[in-house]
Length: 287
Image 1 (cartoon, helix red, strand yellow):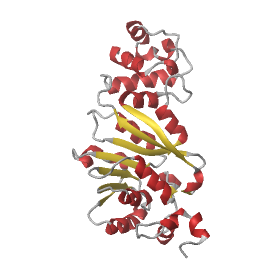
Image 2 (cartoon, helix red, strand yellow; image 1 turned 90 degrees about the vertical axis):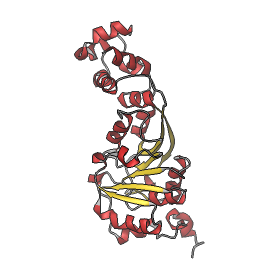
Image 3 (cartoon, one colour; image 1 turned 45 degrees about the vertical axis):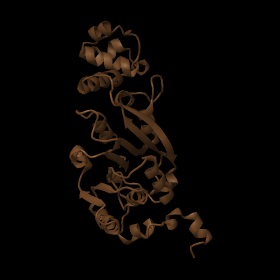
Image 4 (cartoon, one colour; image 1 turned 180 degrees about the vertical axis):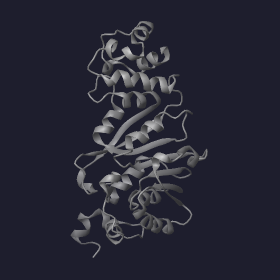
């Protein structure tokens, strides 16, 4: 019975979109999560709905989802007003389950089989207002984010990113100077975007449960970040944080650090984690 205590304990049974519970979909299609693909399926439809809401209004925008798996977040995006979702899925086993969601929302979902790391996301956006919303596979999440943060064209092709990461990675994204987690990712994100952790998700919400807490990060591009060559900034941060326990005069030696420090007036006895984003930009511009 729909009102039984068992139903109350299992949010997946509370689906209101007319599609089968996600557990049923996974069992029917034999979709055991693959560690090699960084898969952890989020089955709680209350939480997938919370992720979709965190992305803000979805009407009138193209939503790109990476790694939809059995389609839990895809369904939530549909239920929360997304008019057009482009879902990129590498795992061929999941395609049949995704097609069922696609058939349930005719004309609103495009499924692209393939590797997100080989996808031209700007072409998918095609100049339309676009948001990326995804429970990113753990093994490619950071690499994808760095690519989206270092687009040659800025403002970028996307209006916002609503992404799920391991909490440790999320903390690196939003870290500020002096934080233990502050590093190259925090500089790149802080330079071009405003990022915040929206909420955490416990391991038990996933199948299989990961060993770590996950976090949903909301990222919005800055309209006019400080002028800087992204390749030079990436190079400076790579050297500075590559030997983060050393003073800057040591860690930047390989890129003529003495000259850069003198030109920018930055004390060479400082360490990378103490520099502001503005100081890293100054170093990059001097290189």
